Image: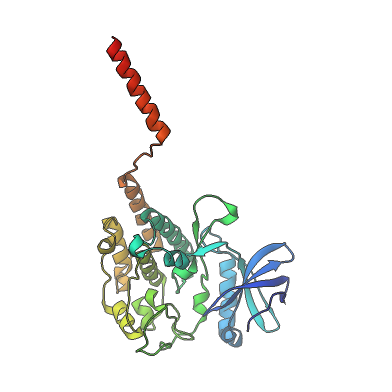
Length: 331
């Protein structure tokens, strides 16, 4: 059920639709009490109708509301009105990483500059580490759930913020549903009402219906980081079946095959994130973050920084050289 502009949910007035997904519709709204813009996620009917899922949602919402981190979109409030359950979050201006990747890459080169990809990756790993320490696993980490925003109107570089943290636990598990096994994959596929996640970023254990833990997020993190550097997804297929087969048994091409300037240690870090066996992956997001910070430091030292010379600067140098020549000739 879509909400029309002007609809009120408690103190919040709906202004416009921002988007929709497997975990509900998202709206821009105004908080009449604090006179601020917020984002409201209206949960789908299967959550509201299932007492177990609803209790889990409320428990997760309380945990998320207490989870303060600069790279996690904060939860402000949770409520219900006229049978509608909703979550109130910070309204972020910017673009998702998915949108950013959609207009980059291909023949133009890497989807992101390596230094930018490393910076966003460090921020996301930091956020994952904070949440994992609180016992929260995302389970649906993907470029569409990472917002690049300049919070507070800052003119500095964009920062990454994770969306929908913890909400992935609200969906029951079971056999994979969705397009036919012979269907062509033309867009990211999300199992609806079954195993949660977008296939290209799902770990093998998720596809097998096993319990997800922090290492499941680390697999998805590796797939996202691979895509930001290689300008292509880590796992691809012409059908749902072939895509699942690639995730379960194939290794993606080394990053250096797509982008030769990729630091070798970054290639190794991503490959370890994407290990099929969770025990072979990095075991904590904290370990990943520390490695990324070290790689970023090494990369900054090796990237040449050619000085930019303006025409006026070159003219001054020519004048100085000419003056020195005249002095030498007169002596």
